[in-house]
Structures are given as C-alpha cells and as structure tokens.
Image (cartoon, rainbow, N blue to C red; front, side, top):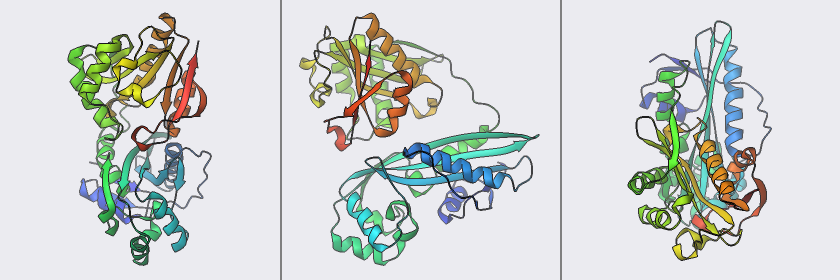
Length: 357
C-alpha cells in the first residue's frame, strides 16, 4: 500500500494506522478551522476536508493526504475538548448513564496532474456509559487524561471501566475508522464501482437477512429483530420494500405500516393489532442500507419508492421520526419538519417529519 501523509499530530491516529498496516508520515495541519454547520456529521466532514486541503498544498503531486476530525455528540449537541477541569466534569456528568454518539470525519485528497481528487466520509458509533458517581468522575479528571480528548474521555484509557457498550466501530471512538480507511485507500482515485440494484416488495425469505442489516445499522436498544419483521410482514407487507443487487444480495430496505392517525406511537413498532392497512397515514419504521452500499443513493431511492407507493395507494401523508443529523436528508426528499417527537424508542431523541400529498 502507498504511503500517505497524515494531516494530524494525534498519537492515537498514528497507532491505528500502524495497527492496520498503512504506511504514513506526519505533517500536521495548521489551518484555522471554520465551521458552517451544527450537524455533527457535517461538522467532522467539513473540518477533515479543511485539514486535508491545507496539507495538500505542502506536498508533492500524487501524494495522498488523510485528514480527520472527531467529535462527541449528545442529543445533537457537539462536545469538543474541555477547556478546563470543570468543563470536563460537566461533560462527563452529562454523559454518564446515557448513550451518545462519536463521529469521525475522514477526507482523502491527492493532486493528480493538476486536479485535486477527493473522497470524504464519516463514521458514527453509539457509546453507552454506566452511571458514574461525581467522586469517580473527579478522580478520573485528576489523571489529566480527559483534557485533550473530545467529550472529555478516552475509551482506550481508564474510562473504559465505565463503558457499558458500543454499537459500531470501536476504533472510530479512538479517533479513526481504520478498517474503513484501509479499504477506501485501496480503491481511492479509481472511481467507485456503481452497484446495480432493483427495488421490489419484500419476501418472507428476505426477513433473516433484513434482521442482520438492521443489527448493523442500529444499536441494540433501537434495532428490530426477526420476529418483529415477521410480524410486520404478515400484517402490512404492502409497506415493505427491499433493494436487491444484481448478484442477489440485499443492499437495504424500507418498512412501515398504515395508521388512522399521524402519530407514530412507539407501540406501533411491536403491536400488530394497531396496524390498519386501510389507514390514511403511511408510517415509516425504518430505512436501512448496509454500510458497504451506503453513499450510492440507495436509501433515497428506497424512500422515494415508498413515498410513491403511498401516493398510489391514496394515503394522505407519509410520517417518520428520525435523529437530528438525518433531518437534512429527509428534507431533500420533500419531508417537512413537524416537531420533536414524544417517542422514547431506544432512549434517543427523535424528530417527527411528514411528507404530505
């Protein structure tokens, strides 16, 4: 594998590159960071690109530069590195006993014959902490470990004692989704192979693969299981679609039910008796795309297919709830933001959106 230039002085990112066998040299970015968004995924992608572009100007042609930025987010609020010990305490106090997200944005750039080739992506991992006493938090802060880390903790350090579980890439929490970087580097600059797929109604034999995709896309507290999908399929199969690739693999799916009201109650996810196929509102339970097929428009295609199906069946509107970082995605499709949902599904904060006909 070609040597890259790491636009970061982070010792943790260096260790992760070494761990997966990516040769590198370090040339830290000196750019003044400018943030134009408050959405965590957008912020980390934007900052990683700024760092990468700064270093790209200082290296020779055909040198691949890697820029990265990591933030911790809780209920949509971004938590950076603490300014002092008191701020570190307030951050950890907020996170203890809760589930939060860690986002890392990564940009790969290379100058090739005067043209800048760029690829930017991000990874998100859910992290859940045990309840932690104030005394334990202050003892941890006294070690000095939190002071140079987003969210005021290091999962690879002493605070590992308080990590109840994670869903997603552990290395992403450390500071770099190293395996994804490795595989993207192998094809960087060669152009992504376009996946050919078709959207079709789900079949009962698809359900176990669907449950596996769900487990990869959502944390355990939010993910539906095989029995849930079987119940949904048997009750409202006209609201269940999959994207199937030309080689027969499932790339993703979208599923839901119909209801008499536009209130997407948590009970609908598990109680088939509440589903009314003749109801005027199409509810969305989930839109999932396997990680290896993301960033290719499959999720948007699935959702537009569901919307058009609902229109053809004479529904008044399509209703869903989503996390804050997904609001721009659904607005692009045509959904309107309604309000913060009263859902407590998975212990997360959800936002109600509606596509009206």
